[in-house]
Image (cartoon, rainbow, N blue to C red; front, side):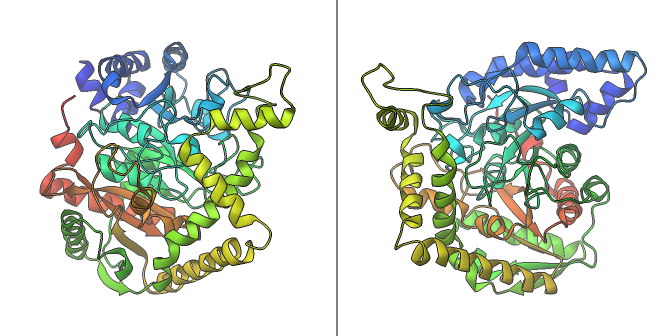
Length: 498
């Protein structure tokens, strides 16, 4: 029975709970049992809130018994990336500097999940402060990819994607600063969506790069992602960057997937040297499938995209150097050297030396240098100009097409440790995803098969204009349905055995 429950989609689970065929408690217990059975190997979670999850589930069952109307995801379990504050349970952001910190309030996204009666199982592992593409930068150890535990599950949200792929949760939340929802989705055979910047509240999400960070839904199907997107999206007066507009009709789009008559753009800069042959093969097959489904394929040239990686690694570290200045060892979290023999400045220095990992220190130093007097215009200012050029390339492209498609990542999941000593090789994992963050558009990754050379998942990226998030789901649902009909679902049909 447990195995049958954990293989259900979120939509199926919610329907069975609403009808009384399953109780929310039974569903939660099934997933907690799965976590207990496999997470020692996977290490998707940093904290399991067993008592809190069961209490939430009992409340859902009591509502149903009273005849109250349940929301579309009531009673469905979820794995929450450990970057969103959660009242009463730890939020560490994968960092030693916040180890053991228990927030006194919920992030807006956390509150919306609770208000929708989504059952939060616990907090998932991540690269420290969301800085990384492999979840190897977590202060609490790496997460394994359920397809092959010796490989990375993507980053920074590898814990969330691994929880989905190992059937420890049917839903998860990630954040995407340069691809940290989409890249993990691609390498684990799951679905991940970066909503339009400002489409999901950032209040209570620990900041890395404020002009790029965006929370979003992670799931195993396009419809499940849409249902979750609808729950967490919408305006929030507590977030000054939040868009004051209704959530696009994402669920309706996911239920009515079609690409007939749509113009789909293929950017020539998103292929070439550094792309794995099997990834390119599966992408080309996906483009051919879109054509079969009635889409018109349009070739696009976006020359500024070649500069995106360089611009990102000036803008993001600059903003992180500013945001992480608050972690001083004096207000909350870790405090080192406070024994009466050190000044406040020395305590701050000792705390940061011990609390921050190597990648975080690297980015803080890079960002501080880029913002320093005499270098600001040459580095940070120039990067912002490139960002404008990228935005313009997108605007011109969306005059010609409805959506853009590309591989999500240039390669499949690489081995844990393979790129640990080569930051540039690690950064290249986000080659296809970064332009969207710089422009603020919406984007999705969904499975498009397995690479023939290693049998690992490949992701198809779909990019839509800002506030046209529904187009992602319309195209994604059509591709998913056609793909499943032709080849079967890569995760559900060929899921790895743990």
